[in-house]
Every structure is written in structure tokens, then in C-alpha cells.
Amino acid sequence: MHLSDLLSVSARQVFRQRRRYWGVVLAITLGTAGLITIFTLGQDVKNNINKDLDLIGGVTVVRSYFDNQLTSAPQWFHHRTLEALRSLQGVAFVTCVAFNHTRVYNVNKWYDFSVVGVDEYFWKVRDLWPLDGRLFGAQEINGRDKVCVLGEDLAQRLFPAGQAVGKILQLENDLYLVVGVLGGMHDHDMASKAYFPLTSMLERFRRPVLLDRAYVRCQTWDDVEPVAEKIIPTVASHQSAEQLKVEVASAALHHVRKVAWWVEFFVYLSLSATLLLGGVGITNIMTAAVRSRTREIGLKKAFGAEDRDILVQFLLESLWVSLGAAFLGGILGRILIGILCRFIEQKVSEDLYVYHLAVSFLFAIILGVSAGLYPSIQASRMEVSAATRYE
Picture (cartoon, rainbow, N blue to C red):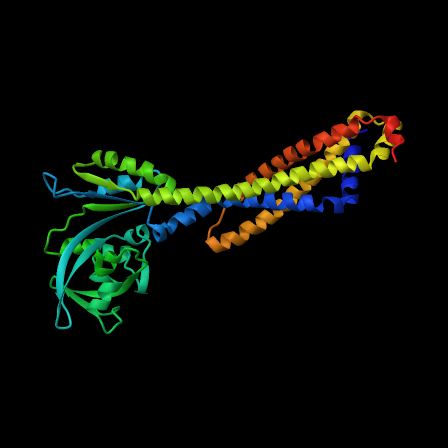
């Protein structure tokens, strides 16, 4: 028989016996859709999760600072050094901050608190947002504007009547407009500080201000350790790295990796089990089909069908089932990707989806051939005399 005839005969046979295959098709469809979705969205989901890891300890943030109490001369991060850190592979953002201490007289009372000079990257690195008002950005920093953002606890201390946004804060003989109250803080100490544009702090504060602390936010948790190892050599290639310390939340990072590994393991295990059950289902159903169609096989051989024709026909039937399920899984996977993209606010490359769809079809071919091979061999080796007498 010609291959085209075998293709049409096997396709018709699968269609006629479609009720027998629906459970297997459903299992393979769900497994294929799950794998396509996970592999296609895997990196984007991981990046999206890493954006919010401050909620579980800020494990993607690497802290580096000069211990100026031990240095022979005051050290700080130079502009070219920060640019070099930003160019490292795996780095998302780098921010440099300056700390100082001050006191203000407000509502007939003196208040002591820490002030922090920050650049426009600070909010992204530390994953902060305005609880009230807004956060100042590059425009205010470049313009050296006299604005500030207060931590929630400090805002309540300075303005117990509420509504700190829009109030004026007198500091270092200058008047600063409070434009926002900071939210998203998981460090209580940050809530008791005031945040100023770094340029304004360097220009207007009388006390010496050193840019001796930098925070590096990595793209994923896998980048943390490689980036941390590169910080000191990178700094040393542009300036003195005397008493430069680098800190990583190692315990939290290990815990996050462990949890993520187990989650991924059980997800892939469940999807693999689903596909495996689908393959076993194809084998069982094809074996049962061979038994139920014994007389049909005998008659075909009696009319001149060769063993090879019988083998190819049953293999093609198995392939039609697995490829049909993979096709449905591809459609379901695309729908799931579209839904998840809306939730995580990401857009994935269509090329990536097409690539994983092609991989899923290749896997379906392997699954169909391997699952249908044994029943097909059984059918091809069947004796004509025994098959035609089978009741």
C-alpha cells in the first residue's frame, strides 16, 4: 500500500474509534499545554517573581559599602565605578546612597532622625512605592529640587495631625516640600528616615556627605552570587577598593532557591506523569485495538497486505492520536499564555512560543511511535490462519 493510503486509512480508523481515545487525548493535551506554557513563560515568570522578592527578604539585592572607620582615607563610589557596575551581566539596577543625621524643630519640638540622599534608581532597587503623594524622580534630582519623601513612622512623628504631603520641612536653613510618604518598606528602620534627592543633599548639607553605600539589584536570584563576586574586582579596576564590603542575604537566598526548586520539581513531575500516563494509555488502547481487530488484520493479510503495511498503519494510528492531542495542547497552551500574560503584565515572544510548540510536536511523535510500537509489531506478526479463524 502507498503511504498516502495508509495515512487516510489510519486517520479514518482513529476518527471512528474516537470515543475510545478521548481520555488519552485529554491527558496528553493537558500535559502538552502545561509544558508549552511553563517553558514559554518560564523566564518571564521568573523575572517577574524576582521583581518582588523584597517581600521575602530582598534576596536579589546585593549591598556593598566602604567601612570608612577602617580605611586610611575616606572612600566613596565614583561615577565611573557605578556605571561599570551597571554594565555587569545580570545587573538590573544600581543605586548609590548617602547617609547623614540631622535634627529639625517642628511643632514646638526638636526631632532627631537620619536623612538619606538617593538617586532615581533607589525606589526600583528597594521596591518602594508612595503610600501617599509621589516619589521624586530624575527631573527633581537633576534639578536639585528642594523636595523630600518621609518614611511612614517619621511622617507620623513630625505631623501627628496627619497629611504630611504638601507640608514644608525646614532643614539645614532650607525649606523642603514633602511630596510623598514612603510605602513598601519591610525594614522598620527605613520607615523612620527622610529621603532627599542626592544632588540636593550633596550641594546643600553642611555636614560631609559620602557616597559610600551602593545597592545592586540583580535580574534573578541566579545572578546574585556571580554579580557579588564581580563587585570588588570591578570597583578595584576603577578606584580604590580598600575596606569594601559586599553583603548577600545568603540564608534567604538559599531558602528561596530551595522552595523554587521543589515547586518546579513537583510541577514538572506532575506534567511528566500526565504525559507518561497518556503514553501508557495509547499503548493499552492500541493493544486492545489489535485484539479487537484480529479478523480485520487477518483479512488484510489474506488480500495481500504485507507485515510492513500493518505495522505502519497501526503506528500511524498511534501518531494521529498523539499529534492530535499535541495540536489541541498547543491551542490550549496559547490561550493559557495569553491569560497569564495579562496577569503578570508581560509580553512573550511569539518565536519562543512557536519554538516550544515545535518541540512539543517532536515529543508527540516520539511518544506516539514509542507507545504504539509494541502493539503495531504484535499486529504485523499475526498469523493469517489464526487471525481469520479468530472469533
